[in-house]
Image 1 (cartoon, rainbow, N blue to C red):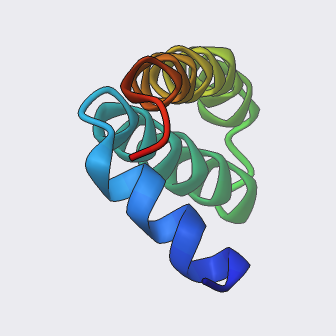
Image 2: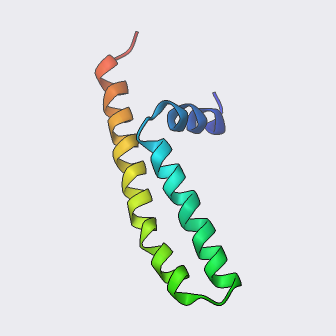
Length: 74
């Protein structure tokens, strides 16, 4: 199994990772919008969403990893 297939399977199988992806998308859009319109308040405010997205990914992948290790080899 290739690395991209493994990443896709783990991200799509992780329910907490989907809100993390949504949050990262909103943050990226707001940062780009703030930089394009010279609105630093919007860009810097959107940077506050980045740690939340990272935490959601980390928690979700940690739970997915613990579920995989609990199942054991078949």
